[in-house]
Image (cartoon, rainbow, N blue to C red; front, side, top):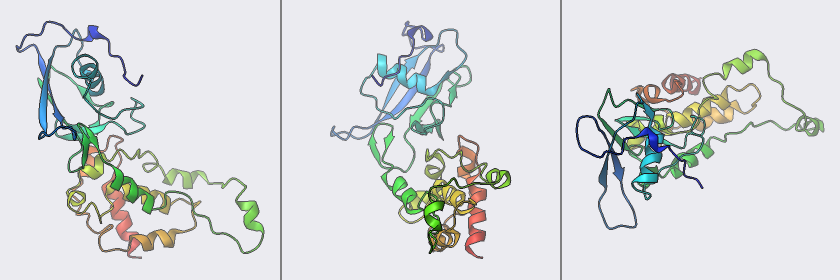
Length: 259
């Protein structure tokens, strides 16, 4: 029921190896097989289409070639962040990435780099989400000593248009982990350094006018490894599928942590 049907008329059924075909090379690994990781190569030929989404290609291969191919997917519109993977050497979302066989005849798909692999293109994001939990990604309100806090907890927390405008470029993050998986500092210090995605989320809660625990959040960042391991390589900004700028946000956090 979770398989998305891709119409077969997108592709040509004459399976001959020639220059008219394009080739998809997919990283494969199955923990239940006593085998080293391998690549599967699938030759395909589009019918009268200039380009197609990478996720549609994966659906077609899973439905018609190999049903054991495993990958995450959900919304197909770049909202959930489930289908993050490395496509031709660049971390991206398969549902937003176009492939044009007239430009390139080869397409190589890996899971996100330097992540633990569960199977094929699926990464283990347990550490990533544990780090997200550490920053307390929710509004923290101070409780009053009198009975006013009972009323405050039930009422809407208003925010001005200017305060809301400050959050633009932050709330759009969908936690796809493309930026964190492209960061060399996160590769080698994933257990200590929070990474671009989590730090961007931290900044979002830090500057939210409705939150009242800015000092607590800043004190959490005052650690030798949680934020200082960023060396400004800006890989995170280059690969972000939502066109955000985590590198700039980390510089802001470094400034706030020194105040």
